[in-house]
Amino acid sequence: MKMNTNAIQWKNGLKDGIPICLGYFAVSFTFGIMASGAGLSPWQAVVMSFTNLTSAGQFAALGIIAAKAPF
Image (cartoon, rainbow, N blue to C red; front, side, top):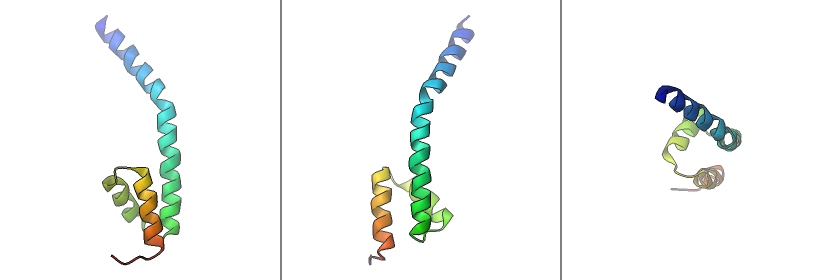
């Protein structure tokens, strides 16, 4: 019985997480398009996504990269 309850809770958790997943997908898709437009390669965009803690930081950095600001 306990396994059945855990499985139901797990399914409910997945169902409840769908809206959050869609939000992350939309932001990630937009970042990919903008990163490509700023001249980043796909691997650079992936590494940037892995190393940044916030989406706002990613988009701010894209503006700096696109402006070709010096280090």
